[in-house]
Image (cartoon, rainbow, N blue to C red; front, side, top):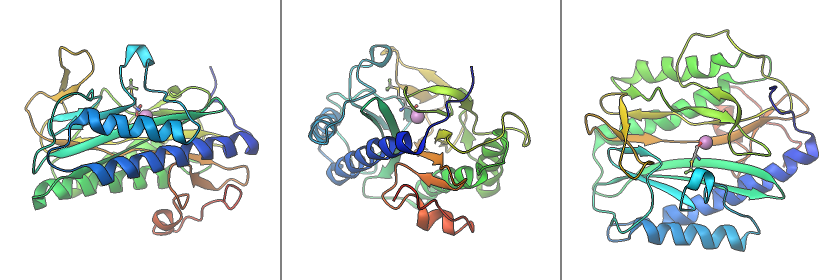
Amino acid sequence: MAIQIKTLDQLKTMRKAGLLVRSTLELVKANIKAGITTSALDAIAEANIKRGGGTSNFKGYHGYPATICVSVNDEIVHGIPGDRMIMPGDIVSVDCGAVIDGWHGDAAFSVIVDPKDEARQKMLDVCEESMWVGIAAGAAGAKLSDIGHAIEKYTNAQGNYGILREYGGHGIGTSMHMEPHILNYGKPGHGPTIEAGMVFAIEPMITMGTHKTKILDDKWTVVTTDKSHGSHFENSYCIAPDGKPFVLTEVDGGKANLARFGIEVSELLS
Ligand code: MF3
Ligand code: CO
C-alpha cells in the first residue's frame, strides 16, 4: 500500500477537521484544573466536536469508549476518561481527533496543573519542541526516517529522557491511522521520499525515566513500567501542492514555529 496523496481540495477539508481538533483541545485545556474529572473533559470535547459539525474518530475506534484520551502522570497515552479527578501537580495529556466530510484530524498536548516543577516542565517543553523539530525535518524531499532521527537526536541532546518505542506517528487522511508508521527515533535517510499531498501526524512521547511501557487491564492506558511521568504532543501537517508544509491542526498553520527553522508554510491553505 502506498501513502495516500491528497488534492488541494481534500487538504482544505482536512484543514477544517484540523481546526476543529485545535478548538476542541483549546477548550479542554481551558477547563483543566484541580477537581475536574477526566470524563467531564471528555464531555466538553464531545460537545465541541458536535457543535463544529464533526464526528469523533476515537469513539468506537477498535472499541475505544470516549472522544478524547486523557493520560495523567505515568500514563503516557490512551488514558480513558472516567471518574479520575485532576489533582494539583498532575501532568495531563489530552489527545483528540475529529472527522469532517470523511477527512480526519489528530492532535495532542500535555500540560502541568499548578504547582509546576522545573524538571517536568522542561520534559514537556522538550517533547513539544521535538514535535516541531520532527515536522521541520519532514519537508518535501526528505526521507521519512529523517523525522524520527531528528526527534531522537534533539531529545537526547536535551537530557536523559525515555522515548517510547512501541508508539509513533502515522499517515492520516480518509482514516485516522494510515501508512506510514513514523518512528520517533532511528537512522536518517531511509523510507519513502516525502512529497506534496502527504499528511502525517507527528507525535513524540517521552518520559522522565524509562521508554518501557505496559498496558493497564482496561486494555488501553499506556503507562511507564517505572512509573515515571511523561508527555505527548501531536500535530497533523501536510505538504501542500506548492511543496511547502502546513500544519493543519495549528491556527497559524505552524507559521511561527516553523519560521524558527527557516521554513515558510504554504499560503494555499490559509
Ligand atoms: N490519536 C491517537 C494517535 O495519536 C490514537 C488514539 S486511539 C483511540 O494516534 F482509540 F483512542 F482513539
Ligand atoms: Co495520532
